[in-house]
Length: 160
Image (cartoon, rainbow, N blue to C red):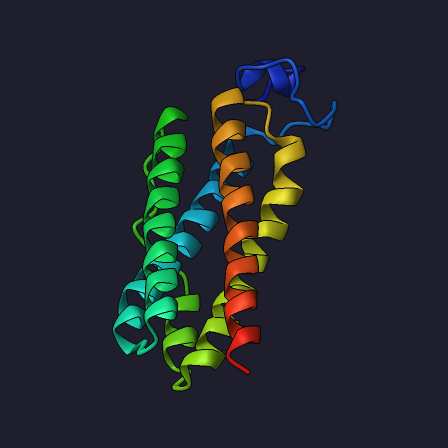
């Protein structure tokens, strides 16, 4: 059911990014579940990759990324539940694709491409999310993903 003013239907009259047309509830839930599945894949990937890292700095970075991915899973689950819905229990296909990459540096570069996909997805969604609590959590998630991309890039460059 959609009202004449979708921004009012999901709890706000607009957001800090402008007056973009808000996502309806179903589109927002689909996007949140898509992100959750991707974050779950990232959490599993980082958990299973940290044991492959011999370098202490790389191991610490992967462990930090793992904690972030778990945190964002929690944020996304809370957002979905705030919309009175049930979170997806699936893990994104990214996990299997990444684990099939035997070289750790190549796998980390692939992880960064996945992180960049999340950044692009969040950048496209945020102007259309007019629910303040969800917007705040996803904005924090965006900033963290951008920071992690920079950290992985720096470590990969240093190792060449």
